[in-house]
Every structure is written in structure tokens, then in C-alpha cells.
Amino acid sequence: MTSQTTDECDVVMRLNVSERCGFVKNTSDCNVEESFINYIHLAFCLLPPNLTPLTVTLCMIWLLFLFIILGLTASKFFCPNLSAISTSLRLTHTVAGVTFLALGNGAPDIFSALAAISRPHTAGLAVGALFGAGIFVTTVVAGSVALVKPFALASRPFLRDVIFYMSAVFWTFVILYRGTISLGETLGYLSLYIVYVLTVIIGTIIYNQQKRSLNSTVQAAPQMPDYQSSDTSDDDELPSLSPRFIPHDYETEYRPLLPYSESTSQIFLGSLNPIDSGKWRRKPMKWKALKIFKTPLEFLLLLCIPVVDPDKEDKNWKRPLNCLHLVTAPLMCLFAFQSGAYGHFMIQGQFPLWLLFLLLGLFLSAILFCTTTNDHPPSYHCLFAILGFVTSALLISAAASEVVSLLHMLGVVLTLSNTVLGLTLLAWGNSIGDCFSDITLAKQGYPRMAISACFGGIIFNMVFGVGLGCLAQRFETHAEVQIEPEGDLPWVLAASLGLSLVFSFIFVPLRNFHVGRHYGIFLLLFYFTFLIVALLTEFNIIKFQ
Image (tube, rainbow, N blue to C red):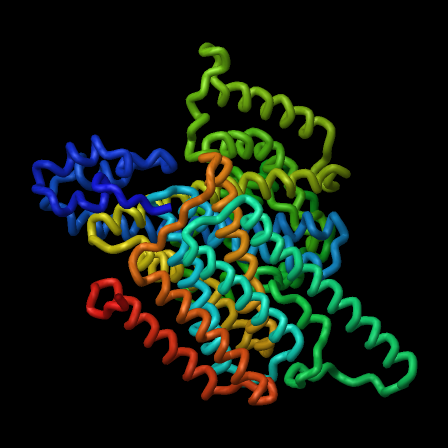
């Protein structure tokens, strides 16, 4: 996947300043078509060379903004719509946890990996991000949870998740070592997660049968559940459940006592307000400052992406806003798909495609407005969850493509490999939200749920991030996918992740599945040691050959 020819864009920094723009224009590796902005052309042709530090600073700020887009779209729009779809399909918590909810948790990671691994010159980003995020989550996040709230792990779910994750890591290591992957191997790699899902479902069925059998023979007095015991509970069978899917508090205490009917304009303006007044009163100042910063972006997303919430009485039905969504959501899909490749497409060279989408949206919006009321959602309201899911997925994909292209430019300018950028900036950006969420969940008394989310969700991310990326590359090139690791760093990543998993697999059962501060401190020290070794390897201070 990584080209070894002499015309790579990475060599541009070795040239004279006057030659760089011409080299960028004439090198195919520098002409990125998968993003809205050609960042390399921007850095070397549009901006003067003496402003390179300013360029890097502005790009870092833009990168932070892109990560906010990814996180906000995933948590506020993508995940709730996935939850609504799983509810409409009447899936059990277990099936939803390892399918829809796992996809919701890992959406930024998976789309970033797909965008990176499907391009030959950025495949190292995918390897670095997936392995780097895996190490970060299983050491820093898991270690922080253990430090905050020592607890006893559920034995079966923990061993199951670690074994399957070690299998995925080993299979990925074999793929990197061989350097190629065929279509059959790609499908087999993807089937690993199917086996994992079946294992979760079968294990849950067996456990529930054993519990019913025990309850039918032993009549015990009702007791409060012991969250610190080592027995398995239903919640432990949700390896991909994260804080994003815990039901929200919808401020029922602020509802009016008497019935009150809002006008259409009031409903429209109220639905576009991203700030909950009740929550605003209780939150600290730092939360309010971040909320103010995110409010303009959230306002624009509310205009374009519908959200169906099955936990609300009205399913989040906002008639005027949902009518507008029939116009804005298809247009966003059109302009976000393949980074706007079809935004200027002309039907038979005469009629713009975006105008057709606009006219169809206006027609459907008028029908919806005339056939519905403000008080009751229509029977087909669940279709808005599918529309919101598709729209948010395409937006996440577009933002992930921008992140990958921007990181590629930073790697060229700073002469860093894609792998080290993946294991640091990309992995941190995609995982830091889960880190704070899981720590908060542990503080609230649910450390087992937080630790299960650490190990369960990353299996989905790795298998589908690598597998679907290789599959997309295969269908595009119609040949075996070539995967050539960049230097020694991918081997350091694979070895470090494997060691951390093996240690947890051995140490935790020896401690009778009780994890405490010593375990958390070790995991944090392990990550910092890994990071130092990885950076020393990147700068050729440590060499393995």
C-alpha cells in the first residue's frame, strides 16, 4: 500500500524552496483528490515558505475543529439514529451492543481508517491509528478507570473480548508480515467479527438459561445487585456499550404543568437551539465555554441532520424542522459524498444534479407539511432515523477524509511518517472523547461497563477498519492488495499492543479478576514507555535491523 518510488511527495522537503511548488504540481502522490482542500498544494504553492510555522499552527487548529466535527456528529446525530434504528428493529441489547452500538462508538475510527487505508500514500495512517488507538484505549483508558475506581471484572466477557482482540491483532500482524492480502483472506478477516458476535449471542443465551434454571430451583430473597462482584450480569454482556448510549435526562422537571401548544414558528426556533437551559444551569464554566464554542457548528448540523429519539414521548418529532430536513439532508449527502465529487455534476450536461435534489426535497417537504401535525409524529417517522444515519455517516466520512489528507500534509512538512502521525494525533483525536467518557462512567459507579467498552469496541474498529479498507482497495484496483509497512514502527506498534493484551490476559485472572491502582499504574507506565520507544524508533535513534 505504500509506494517505494522516487517520486513520492515525502521528498519535497529535500528540495530547494523554489522547486517545491513545481514538484508538488507534477507529482501524483501530492495531488490528493479525496478531500475538499489540497493541503499540500496549499502549503507549498499558495502560502509563502517563510510562513510555514504559521501554516502548521493553522492546520493544527483546523485539525482540532475537524475532530470536534467528528465527535459532535457521531455523538449527537450518528449514535442516536443508530439507537433508534436498533429499537425499531426490536434488537436485543446484546445484538445491538455488538452491531449498531459498536458502529456508533467506533464511527470516527472506522471512517478514518477507511479513508486512510484505501489510499496507497496514507495507509500508514490507518495502521498507526488502529494500533495506536488500541494501545491507548487498553492502557491509558483502562488504566485510568482502574485508578479511579478499583473493581472486579466480569470474568467471561473480559476473557472473551481479550482473546478475540488478540486474534485480530495477530491476524493483522500476519497480513503486515506477508505484505499482501487476497479477497478470500479479506472476507475471512471480516468474518472474525461475525464469529465474535455469534459468541456473544450464544454466551448470553446460555447464561440466561442458567440464570432462569437457578431461579426456578432456588427461591432467594430479592437483593440489590452487587456491581463489585465477579459474577456476570446482563450488563456485562454488552461489550460495545459506551456512555454515549446511556439514556439522557430530558429535564422532565422543567415541563409545564398545564398543556401548552406551541406554534409552528416556536417549534422551529426551539428545535434549533442546541443549549438545554436546565443542563446549562448545572454545568461548570469549562463545560459552558466549550458548549459556546461548539454551538454554531451544532446549529448548522441541526439544520441538516434529523435525529429520532425513541426515549422521548414525541420521538423528537419537530414538524417544521423535519420538513426542512427533507431539503437540506439530501443536499448535504450529495456534497459530502466523495468530498463533493458530484456537487457540480450535470445531468446530460445541462441540468445540475443538486438542483434536482433541491426540487425533489421541496416537493416531499410540502407533502409532509400538509399531511402531518405538530403534535403527533407520522407512522413513517422512523424513516427519518435512516435519513439521519446516512447523512451523518457521509459527513463523518468526509471529515475523516479531510483529517487524513491534513495529517498527510503535516507528515510531509514535518518529515514524519504517516504511522507516527496515526498513532499520535489521529489515535488521540479519535480516542480522547472515549477516555473522558469512560473515566466519568467509572466515577459514577459503573467501572465494569467502562472497561468492557474499552476492550469490546476496538475489536470492531480494527476488523472493519482494516477489512473494509482492503476490500475497497481490492475493488478499486482489481488486484491483490499490497501492504508494505513503513520502517520498523508498525512492528513496534504490533508488538506493544500484543504485549499489553497478553499481560492483561495473564495478570487479571491471577488477581482473581480484581483490578486496582497497581494495575492502572502499570498500564499507564507501559503506554509512556511504548510512546518513548516509538518516537525513538521514528527518529532512527533505536534501530532493529
